[in-house]
Length: 120
Image 1: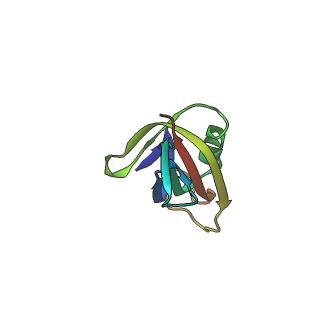
Image 2: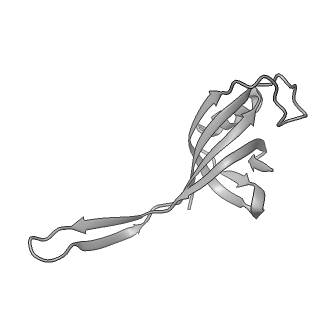
Image 3: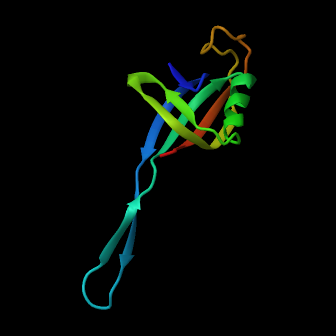
């Protein structure tokens, strides 16, 4: 089971991006010179389903609240200090949702893409 704070999400894809800042200098003679200026914070991209307007709006509010959040999920994943950078959502065309038996079967199901930054 996956949660962003206390909001239930159904993760379909979990990707991370790790980069460092490297300047490439091209002298007139010789090979390329690389200068390393440090690393950027890890970026986490999630593709997930969210059931119901209440949970969708709770995640949408996290984009603008300026607070850090915690992602917990399968495989012992627990990452705190995350900033919700962006959220993209679209209403799916499900006739009957079965992901959340605690909600009505005709609850809307959203496909949500999240971009999360580590606040290190």
